[in-house]
Image (cartoon, rainbow, N blue to C red):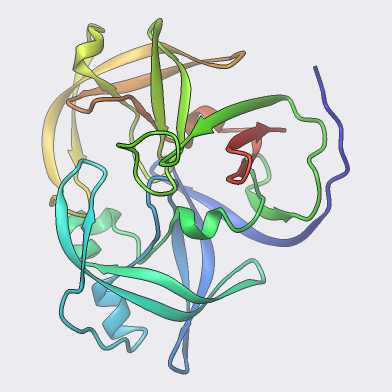
Length: 270
């Protein structure tokens, strides 16, 4: 069933895909210095992050001693520095005094490291439409048009163990009811071993996060696993992991347009 509304766009930015992750260009301004940089769009990050080397060398940010403890996607804690950037601009939309954590991304993630990460605290401020056909990110100024599907989610307001600004979809993976973390900053989809799905092959890949340095390891893959969210069905490949819940990146939305609505806790597929 199609639902039609009027949709207007007044701000937009080009999208690029690198390693199954979405990037867009942003402008960071701080203490009179402005820098354009390709930023990772990360629904798995509560707030924005900036690489420490980029912050010092390119943005002239003076770093103080650690004043914050943050947790990685794998549940590991690390020291960080919390600061407010004078301004962050995305597609012509400016966000003054943007809270940001300074993290040593380059030493942890090497060639995969983004210089800047757009977290949920910024993504939730607008209705952003991600057109993965034309590769454009646009801000919706009014309601959506021709909604093909709606995926409802829950977050830290609903689950005591969920992190701030998280997106947990409710669905089925391999026929089992579960909550599913939507993490657009993840390079892979992950399936807990306790789901009992047998792997179909073994591959060697790199894995790491903001707290754990990148390592290369052999891992088991489950191919063409059925994923059902609401009335929507997908088939994805998953890496077997020790996580409690499945994690999916934006791969299941490739070739589609979708809108993140943090206020209503919904993903609208257009």
